[in-house]
Length: 249
Image 1 (tube, rainbow, N blue to C red):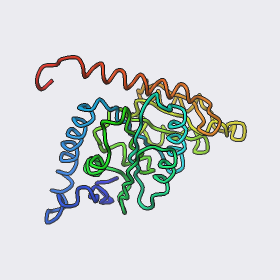
Image 2: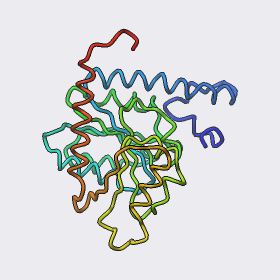
Image 3: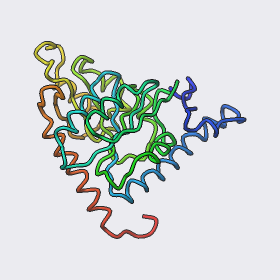
Image 4: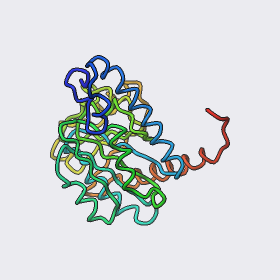
């Protein structure tokens, strides 16, 4: 999609595209993005911070999940957030109200975040004070899955009102997920047409064996499992970073 609509060129990498032919731009931007993403990952690893990329369609409940997560974790895990939207700081304001450090990225016309945007935002966050950094990507089921940000984990949200067939319709995002969250499950009694078993089956048909959790940020259902997944992710990351590896491995 990005190769045809032109949203490969974002505020974070625009200078790389100036004065170049379109074919050259499209051929180089993903590579340059991946190089920057690797640099971002070095930053996260150096501070022992687990970076989690939250992806979903607009309105699937990413911000509500972060609000509930901040309340649930308390002092167990110190979290920070990078918010991505085309405009406004509405979501960032909601996160700030939870006492969580947050940086808003307004992408303008770009329908995804890229590694350059995230790197710029990192200059405004003290990673020494964090255990987990969430990147709430722009609401979009297509492009965010194609851009490495330097994250350690991808989490894809599928909300009950969206329908259970989204993994089949948008396979790239759900195939790349390390965890799939079926959100807004408090609405299940009012939307019996959403079949959780079908949603799970669609994910499995993509060859993805990642955990799938049902939860509701509103009712609190399933949030303990989500918190346990995060805590285990932080522990695993720090354990792996403590193991000496050969140079370049």
